[in-house]
Each structure stands twice: as C-alpha cells, then as structure tokens.
Image 1 (spheres, rainbow, N blue to C red):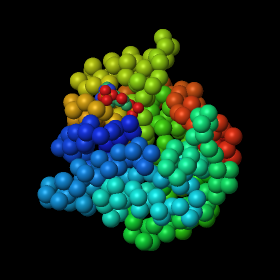
Image 2 (image 1 turned 30 degrees about the vertical axis):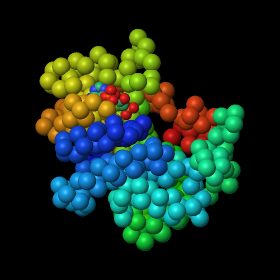
Image 3 (image 1 turned 30 degrees about the horizontal axis):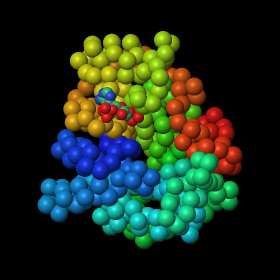
Image 4 (image 1 turned 135 degrees about the horizontal axis):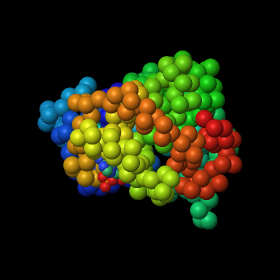
Length: 311
Ligand code: A2P
C-alpha cells in the first residue's frame, strides 16, 4: 500500500476527474474511494483512460474502495463489490473495506440512502459482522479483491474478526491526525499485524471550528513554526508525522498545487524532537471529529456503533 493515497470523499463529477488526473500526474498510485462517495464511476473513467493508453499498468495502481453500510449482510457483499468494480471499470480492487460496522437499510428500491422521511437513520439491528467478513473472504477467493480490511471498527470488533478469520484483515482505515493520534488503537493493530491508514490526516480543516486553546491544526503555532523552520508547508509537516509513524495517509484536495504538495513528503524528515513536539499535541478522544452521530441520526442505538467504548 503506497504511503500516500488520494482521498476522494466529496469529490464529484468533472472536478473528481480533474483532481484524479492531477494526482496521477503528480505520482499518486494509491486511490481511496467508497461506494457512498458516489464517485467510483468518475474514478473509473480516468483510470480506464490511463490504463488503456498504456500510461500506467494495473499492477502499479493501488485502488481501495469500501462497502456501504446498506450492504452489511453476508448475502449482499458480492453484489455490492461487483457494482463497485463495474463503476471503477476494474476486475479487482487492491483492498476492499467494510466502511462501517453498523448495518443499515436502504430507503427503497430506488433510493439507497439509509434515511426515513424524518431524516432518521434506518438501522439494521441484526448485523452479523463475523458473517459479513466471511463473505469478504470469499471475494478474495474469487479474485475480486486482493486484500480485505476494516474501517471505523473499534478494538473489540477487530478482536472478534481475528477470532474467526481465515484471511487476516490487512488494513484498518480510521480517523488519525495530530489531535487524535489513536495510540491505544495503534497498539492493538500492531499486535494483530494490521496496518492503519489515516483518514482526515489534516484534521478536517473545513469541518472543525478552531478555538484559542485548540486552533485548526494547519494553523497551530507548533505546526506552523516547524513548517517555517523546515521550509515546508503545515500540511506536509502533519502528513509527514503520520508517515513517520508508519501510517499511510489519504489527504484530499480540489486544488492542483495542494494535491502536488501533499505528495511531496519523501525528501525531508522530522527529527526526534520535532516528532515529540507534535506528539505532545494529542488530544486523545477529545480530538475525534467524526463519531457519525450527526451524519446518521440515531446511529448510537445500534449495537455495533463504534464509539461506545473509547477505542
Ligand atoms: P482544498 O480542497 O481547498 O485543498 P481532511 O481530509 O482532513 O478532511 O482535509 C481535507 C481538506 O483539507 C480539504 O477540504 C482541502 O481543501 C484541505 N487541504 C488539503 N490539502 C491541503 C494543504 N496542503 N494545505 C491546506 N489545506 C489543504
């Protein structure tokens, strides 16, 4: 798994196509998407162009997509992966992740959003995570996914998967950034031999409001002064911190210069002291941005809601 991937959450239409072209031109080979991002078809168009013109070989690419929560039933896994592959115009993905451990239901046959007319999340309380994971293993057997893994799972859920799995989850994708360093979960994953991919590695600068005590990460004085001393940007410092902690990162941007900048992380290094100064900014659980309660109203009622325990 290349250490820098292109994040594509909220990327749509022609903008998505443009951003992916810039990313491939800048050297990105790892692309992260998900069925719910609704951009697999745009990504598929660009990949097809690059692959069919011989600009790139399939083996050079590392394409990750994620199974939507409405597919969290063993019998649905194969069908949903096939849908993603058709949109991506690929015969296999390099990594297929269960996007979230909570099972949901589609609104209707024509509307696959998991919400009722009041905006409440339609939960499937019968989620059988172990069964779902076994169905993912069958997709590896069928050659449709080179590797499989988890996203937004907690340590207990990971442990349960390890008890039943035949093919180890290769990767866990979770929120990790300097304010939310996930040290406890990282230790659990290290023991199991699972790599962690960091989403929102810049601390979601447009989602959070900064305060005097906790400024937006990209503007934190420790980060900006390090960046100034090293002749780098704050984003590069934040991303490099995660890479030096052995975590692949998937920053997203709609701006060509920033797409490029986020890939230029391999010609400088943070010293032990620099790493320690960033490590000291960890806010632990308080630094978490996403618990999904806002996006999925009522999600905390589901028995598999991730954040019932601290990690
Ligand atoms: P933009 O598209 O204007 O570049 P996260 O993945 O943590 O949620 O952060 C994503 C946001 O961070 C994007 O909206 C993006 O905005 C912004 N961003 C991405 N790269 C950089 C960068 N190098 N410097 C500043 N902001 C960035």
